[in-house]
Amino acid sequence: RKATLPEAASIRPIWRKSVPVKRSLSLILVVILAGVALAGAGAFRLPQGVAKAQTNTAVLDLSFASPPVWAPSAAVQRQLFDCHEQFGCVEQVMRQAGAPDAAIAFFRLTSQFLTDVIDTGAIKVGTEFSPWRANSNYQAVLLGGVPAVLTPSLNGAEHQAEADPAFIELKKQFPDLVVWPNDQLFEAATMTPAGGMSFVFRFNLHNSCHACGTLYDARYSFDFDPDLTFRGVHYLDIEQH
View 1 (cartoon, one colour):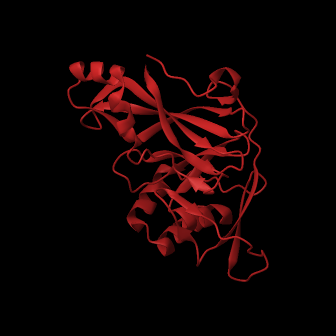
View 2 (cartoon, one colour):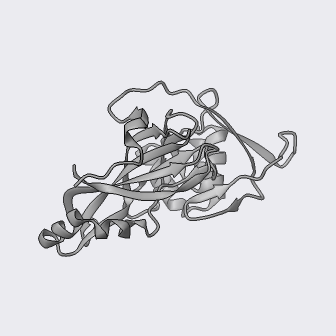
View 3 (cartoon, rainbow, N blue to C red):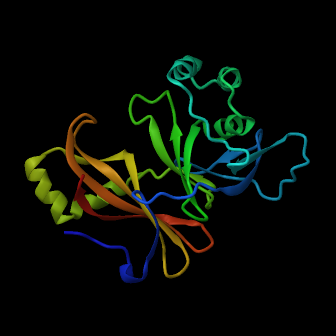
């Protein structure tokens, strides 16, 4: 069984994994480093009306003119691991390794390292890295919507798949079948007829443990309204790798 997005016939794909894209990104996030309030799982909202001229304000420029993208080497990752997420230690390691100021600002804001960005339109798809996770050290992140940074975690939506007859059938083969909520793989971005955006991610199906793969994925859509406000996530279907 294969579900589709609403009004699928009129949805215009703007990015798919197999199609190369030009990496150009122009998004300015003005961040008060001392006053950012985190809101929601894996997401934050930026303060509004902040002037660049304020002395306690850092400008985080998510563009390839001044990129926040920084991929630490294996040796640097080991140093970062020993910092235990303490910002002073992380900042020192990053500066010694030549990280740009924007990458340091991004870490201070999110506690993650932005290692890659794909231009998918008004909202971009990035890859963030954390050396402190036991598994799934690389995660996708959606940049430029509201909230400005959103990690596409399911946060309970994994249970939407459990009513699918395809999921029920697979449980006969894998009795402890679960949707692993953090192992996401970006598949495609689409522009909806109303002018919003949808991002399809695949989440691995496991038989109870992280190492117990099944070669099946559950597909979910993360949807944004035309004003780029995050609307929610909904289950699509199950497919093999």
